[in-house]
Length: 116
Image: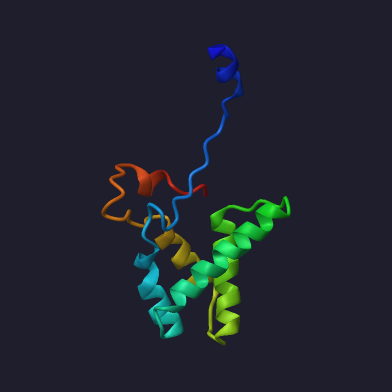
């Protein structure tokens, strides 16, 4: 019986780390600078999640580093904000070093969380 259970175990484990373990509020200064309103961060993150779910459910998986910049560009267009590729690059760099939430207690999360 135990060998049958072993054979049925998945070979991959997927974790949701963005805003579960990693604190995306660290990106607030970017949104304040570019949009004049740090709360646009919440709008962007919701849009990122929606787009991620959409592409996954339509069998067109894209990782966070692909979807997030597209969601930023959509948000910039909606708010008529000037947004450049350099702005996207600097935001993505900041995303790669997001801090963990204080209660996450994860020693290596910020260095290994994203698939880039």
